[in-house]
Length: 145
Image 1 (cartoon, rainbow, N blue to C red):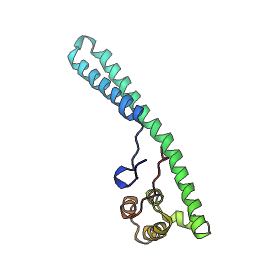
Image 2 (image 1 turned 90 degrees about the vertical axis):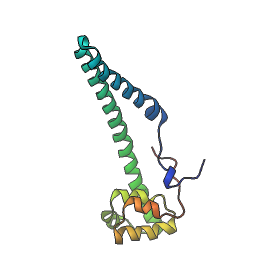
Image 3 (image 1 turned 180 degrees about the vertical axis):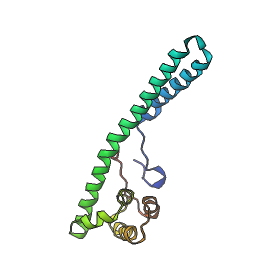
C-alpha cells in the first residue's frame, strides 16, 4: 500500500462512484434531453427524469447517511480510547471542547503530535483541515468507509 497523506487520504468506492452514479447522471441528462426533443412523449420523459433523479438522490443520501454515521461514531470512540491510553483519564471534558472535524483530524497524528495538536485545537480552536495540514508524520487510516 502506498503511503497515506493529506493529498491522497480520500477514498472512493468504484462501483458506486464510477459506475452507478455516472450511469444515473447519463440517464438523467438523456431524460432531460428527451423532454425537449420528444414533445409527443414529454410527460413520459418528465416522469422518467424524475424517477432517475430520485434514484440518484436516494443512492447518494442513504450511502452517505449510514456509512458516515457509523464511521463518525467509531472515530469518536477511537478518540476516547486513545485519549485514555495516552493521558490515563476519561475524555468527556475534552470532547465537549472539540468539534467533530477536529476529533476526526486528530486520528491521523501519531501520539507525540496528537498531544501537541490536541492542545492547539483546544487553545487556538484550529479547524480539522488545519490540524491535518499541521501533521508532520501522517498516521494512515486505510479502513475508513
